Image (cartoon, rainbow, N blue to C red; front, side, top):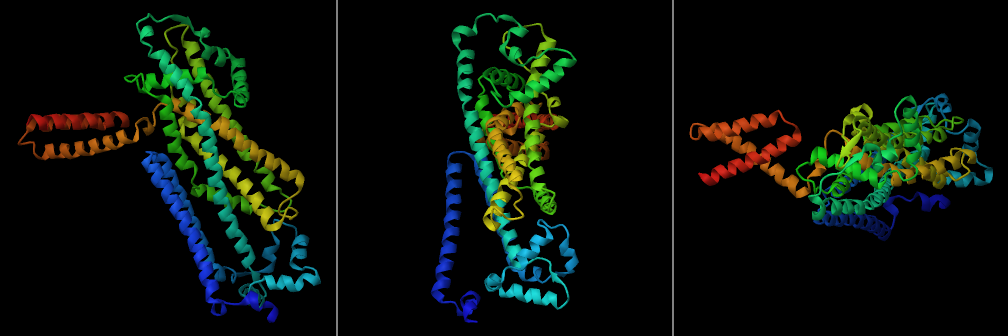
Length: 502
């Protein structure tokens, strides 16, 4: 009893200074983290970085979810370890073999006393409770504790890897700012504005020369091969950026040729970041499925490492091929072009005609890679490198190499490609408006609705004004979201002018 007295002491017989010191330490660390996140949020809001602020809020939500999971595991652990099942059920779907399990559960005699001391009194009681029924506990207290740690490690690694990917990818995209500035200088040079536009053979344009691979059946294969290898070197060139930028501005911002496409692209990427950093319900389903399939001899975690690897290569190839398709459309329709070459954005180039599906794949790739790395380090720290659940070295090394490769390629190639190429959809993103304009637009639209309803109710006093407002409102309901927004602004201005005249 004396040997285990220190280990088995309850809170009743623990010195108060120990309880107070530990409580102070835990509360202090928690408050420090909370204040740090709060300060970071204030700085982001002050800097006008609303997308990044929302991403930080998403991280807080994940932390709250982790806290709730931790609370559930702690509160219900005594009940979980008292769930008893037949011993035969525990001999199937094991991550380690039965012989390795028996060796772990029956240690050498000299280590028996130490092994017993490691078991909590509550767990020993649960084992006895189930043994009386000729059964075994469904989950031991130690296994429950390890599962608790793994969930926490997984979430932290995923958030960390997502932040690193967006940071390094953002650095790559910010290098394109020089291209944006050089294009603006050339396009808005007053000495060049009144010169007649030059007619150029379509194949003399650098964009077509670099991306057009010919016409015919062979060109399709060459195009996909070129797209596959292009993602590894110079995935985006200046000619690509200039051509896609002009296509976007011509399609969506024709009235504003000085539109800063690079700034818009950064805002759009920041908006998407808050989606990538979270762990959606289907990703938790994925975790549960692969925890289920971690069976001895299957080497599941070696094979699933190829899922994000293959998917990442497929996404990169597809994005590169979209640029080739845009070049082909122009080359096949025109022999010569007057002025600048303009591509035509369209959702038809994307999988299932949905540009947003690319973000879903990138989210899954980052999470799956985080899962691989988190699982490796968790096993290493918790059980040791030689643990049976770790697997053989010939399976471990390729997993680590693939994980590093995915992280680097996604940061420096795939994410920048995504940021540029997904702007080639039929519709633009709401990030096209800056934060202040978005707020004003929402305010104008709300005021417009109020005045429309007010005009309808008071039509007997001002029939012409009500008719004008209702006509405009009817037109806006059948327009696109962007057109509706602009009509709402026009309607608000119209009502303001009418109020001023009255």
